[in-house]
Length: 446
Image (cartoon, rainbow, N blue to C red; front, side, top):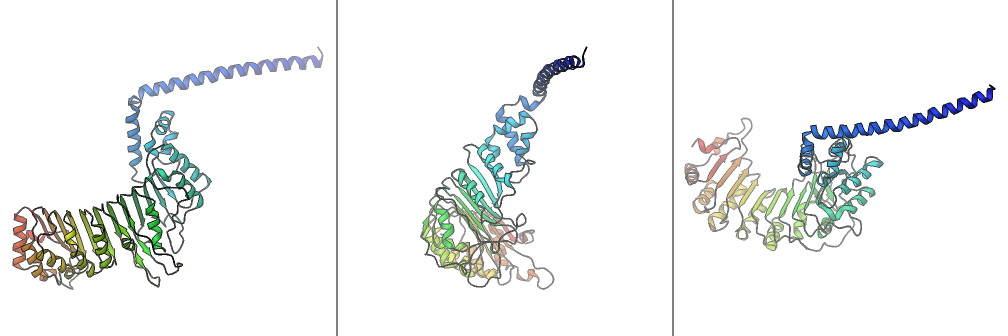
C-alpha cells in the first residue's frame, strides 16, 4: 500500500473516532444533565426548606438579610446578592422576592463601573414595591448617581442622606446639593432623614433649597435634620423663600448642630420653621438649637397642630419662656420633655403651670432634665405641684447630673421637706415619680 493510501486510511479512522467521541460527549452531557436534575430532585426532597411554601421561604430570606443590622449595598459578597450564587433554588427564591431588593445603600461617588449597574439591577428587582434609599458621603452627587435616583424617584418612600466621611473623602465645606433631574418626582416620599455621623455636619447655603425639595414631597410624614448648618456667607443673594404648608407631616426632629469655626453669621436647621406650617404635626423634637423663641412661638401659633409629644432642649432660656406662652395651644399634648442647661431656666414652666392649672389637661408623662440642682427654684416647683395635677398624669420625672469630684455636693441642694412631701403624695396617688440622677431615685431615701 502506498504512503498516500495509508494517510487517507488513517484520516478516515481519525474522523471516525472524532465522530464517535462527539457522540459520546453528547451521551456524557446528557448523563451529566440527568445526574444534575436527579441530584436537584434529591436535594429538594432532603432539604426541609424546599418543602416550605414560597411565601415562607421569602420571609426567611428577608429575615436573614435583616440579621446584619446594616442597610444592604451592591456587593456580590453580602446579602441579598450572595443568595444568588448558593444554588438554583436559592437564586429562584431571591429573584422571586421583591422585598429583598426594596432597600439599598449607595455611595454618592460610585465605586467602579459596575457599581451603579448593580444598583440599577437591584432596584429593578424590587418591581413596584416602595423603596428605601440611603445615600452616603458627600451630597454633591455624581451625575450617574443622580440619574439612578431619578429613574426610581417615584418609588422612593424612605430617603436618608448621610454624611459618612469614614467611607469617602469629602468636599469641604460639606455643602448639601441634592437636586433631582427635571421631571423626576418624590411624590411617594414619606420619610426624609438628613444626618451626619459623629462630629461631622452638613451645610446648606440657601434656606430655600430644602424647602424647594419638600415642595416636591406632598406625602411627607416624617422629617429629621441632624447636624445641619445654614451658612450663607459665601452665597450669592437669593430671593426670600415662599412659605410652605405640609399637610401630611406628623413628625419633625431638628437638632444636634456642632460648633464650628467659620466666621460670619450662621444658623441651624431650625431656620425652616420660619417658613413651614404643619397643621398635622404630632411629634416635635428640637435638640441643642439656638432657635429664637419668637420663631418657635410663631411656628406653633401658625400651625396650631394636634401636638402629642414635645421634646425640647434649647440653648437659650428665652425659648422655654416663649414656649410657656404656647401651652394654651397644646391641649392634646401627652408627652413633654424639657432639658435646660441650668435649673433656674425651668422656673417659667413652673410658674406657667401654677398660674394656669387647666393647661395641658391630657398630659401623661412629664420629664425635666437639668445639669444640676443649683439655683432650682423650689418655691415655684412647690407651687406647681400644689396647683397643677392633671388627672391623666402617670409619670413625673426630674433628672439632674450628679456632680463629679468634690467641687460641690449636690445633697446641699436637695428639695425642702415641703417639696419632698408633695412628691411623696404624688407617688402615693399612683404617679410614677423620679427625682434624682438617672441611676438613682432619691425619693426612695425620703
